Length: 61
Image 1 (cartoon, rainbow, N blue to C red):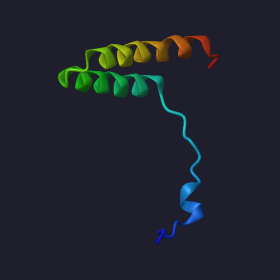
Image 2: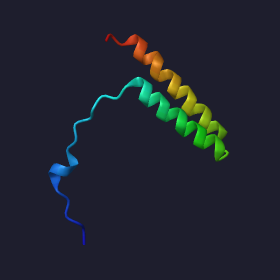
Image 3: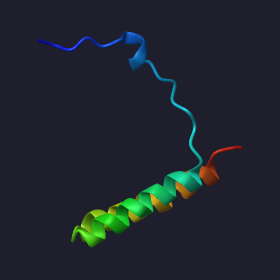
Image 4: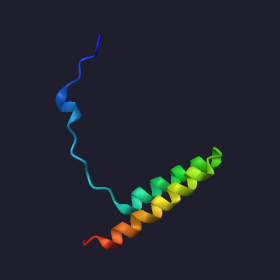
């Protein structure tokens, strides 16, 4: 039996997130990945965190 899902609960307007917060979360994930021995993943997450600022600089405010 499939559980009943309220359709209005699935509709969420995405809120903009600060590039600083996004990059902080990516770096925290990279640290966790590194601790878990996933150094390649950690490296890609750090690269992505840096790219957030690169993209932010190109966008008009």
